[in-house]
Length: 424
Ligand code: AMP
Image 1 (tube, rainbow, N blue to C red):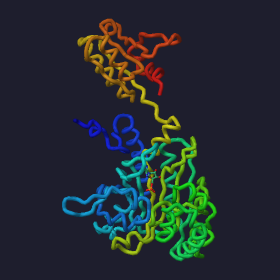
Image 2 (cartoon, rainbow, N blue to C red; image 1 turned 90 degrees about the horizontal axis):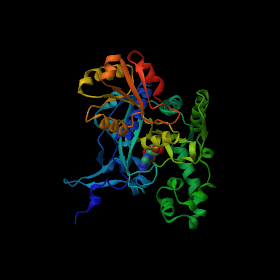
Image 3 (cartoon, helix red, strand yellow; image 1 turned 180 degrees about the vertical axis):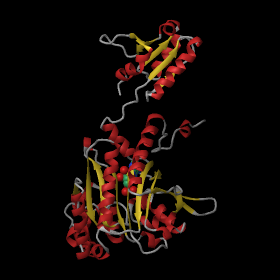
Image 4 (tube, rainbow, N blue to C red; image 1 turned 90 degrees about the vertical axis):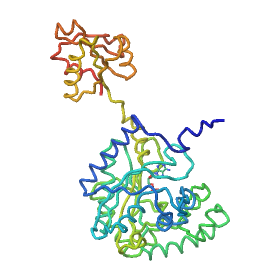
């Protein structure tokens, strides 16, 4: 028996076309425009890497690596993984392509990421990220500028409300002291922790703070805060970042439990969340990483980066009713005799930035049906009479009692007429 499920996209993955693809491209173009202003250039790395690339950098105790990776043994017996995020591959590329000579670098990428998670609204197994990495410069001004750029990208793609959550994961000294404090705290609550968090307590206690278990979350809300364990230097660094964010007039909040789900962050970590419609999942996030380049055999330099989930941005814009279907008009010759005049009219409309489709198959009735299917708001009809009179017959496709069904318009007034009557 033929299994028809085989011909559907794999669970958690989607075909992307039509209006959705246009939204995807729109967001990328806006992000390229803003990040180019800040000096970012594009990089494109493979969608698969050796598994080790992610294990070493993201951390083997993180949910992403321990539960969500698409890992395969290829025909050569190598363990390879579909990338779950973009930073590790970009840093690997900087080292293996010898781009370290060119540091500092500002790189942006976009493309498919894969995580084997439970699919739900805004969470897919194949999704797209738009990411930015600034490598080889360290200082509060770099972190603050990166957060400012993330915010500017969101502002450039549409108008919706969002907030920026920031925290610091401090330096190594901070994390050592903080880890001791939370081990002490969680050990007192060990019996109440989920099985998974009990295991984390032994292997990577910081990851307990990422737990999605509701019981764990309750305990976490009473845990010590990292901001109370900052080394002097880390404290000063974070204060300076916050001062600069204030100077930029950014709407941010300090969230002392924000640790992000990946192991490589140090100092500043941040997340951007939509505040509209109580959409809780984050739109994007990132932070500073001190050890990543070194981990891949590169120099001991630091970087800062972040990524947006493109599907999440699309959902947010849709919630804000940002994407209306582009309005368009149909240009219809009654018979082949009028084709040339109709094409001239089409060119005139296109030159004036009006969306217009040329419809020339079948009789007039069929052409009108096609115009309807294409969701054209107006049909501009040219027949023998119109050619003689220098007019166009305009039909309103969604006529109602208040709207006349059609109107004859002078050819030299048609552009203005269409602009006035095509709702954008
Ligand atoms: P992360 O790499 O985990 O820091 O995620 C960065 C951003 O990618 C998140 O804020 C989301 O917008 C997006 N993202 C992460 N996982 C998924 C997923 N499974 N489906 C859709 N978007 C995701």
